[in-house]
Length: 83
Image 1 (cartoon, rainbow, N blue to C red):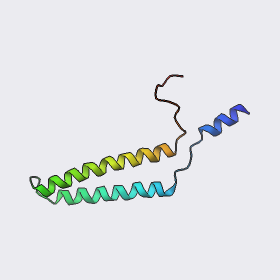
Image 2 (image 1 turned 90 degrees about the vertical axis):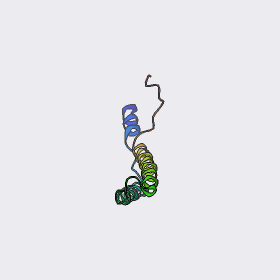
Image 3 (image 1 turned 90 degrees about the horizontal axis):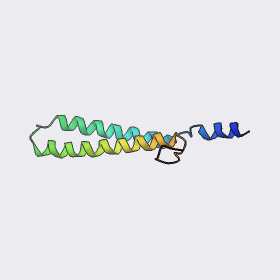
């Protein structure tokens, strides 16, 4: 019975669809910003502002992806790596 409980604990929890939708929307927004940035002259203030926004959105996408990945994984016990 202990083995069965351990296997249940290791099962991935399903990711809520709203998490996936949020991530996909953020990726679409990132793509649109990048497309808009590429239309600007690289030395323009508009390009530089869009570059900042692209980097900011890319970080947000990465965070969302981590959250979604963590939602589908069993909880971690600690960061030490040892038992």
